[in-house]
Image 1 (spheres, one colour):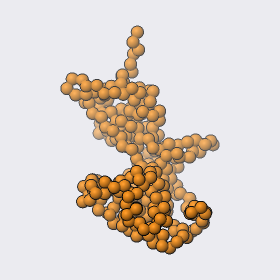
Image 2 (cartoon, rainbow, N blue to C red):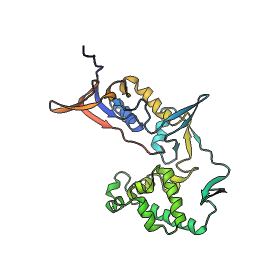
Image 3 (cartoon, rainbow, N blue to C red):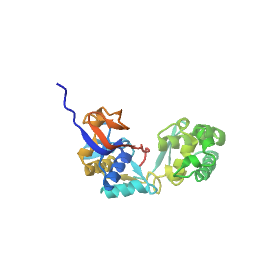
Length: 278
């Protein structure tokens, strides 16, 4: 006997239950449509993930910080009643530099002034180029093709004179983008720098992208959104539509099925991924 399949109907299938996918589903509900969110993981949150450490406390093993230029996620967190608190930013900073640990106060470590000057000129050039990248359509920048054809590592080699400055900028990129400079296009770095309010803002704490964190962990934003949407609109791995989602051509258009979901008007909306920070 064939097993009975759990079938759901929806106006729109949203692929991915990260912040973008859940936000898309919220907007669809507000517009009077009925979405279903398909998630291949067994949880919501995408790149945000809380890890419980006991006594009601969590550490975040995904994106965790938020800064004043990230107005949309801040507005969203307020909508779902998730508060923020300031990142600890007092006391000594520590940098491991050429095999030694160095302590310093403020934003600038005490290393070779020539290296710091080289970092400074590189940041000025990056900020100047970044302002030429349209935030809504970065590919329309006058030099988009040229910038996208080279990696950030290539740009560093050509435009930063000292090895020490290149090392510091490489560390900054790895911390902000969670990627090696050789894996990032220069155009993406410029777009991200512009959207974040400048390179200093991206790497800064007070007044910068690491200024605040979320009470209860960053995944709580997605969990609250999912709770408001309702379990009937979200299909996690092993619970239905996302478990074996596949496309089949049918009649004049295609429907999304999987023994579980068939959008009524055959629309599907992918949820975009976020950055390491929110």
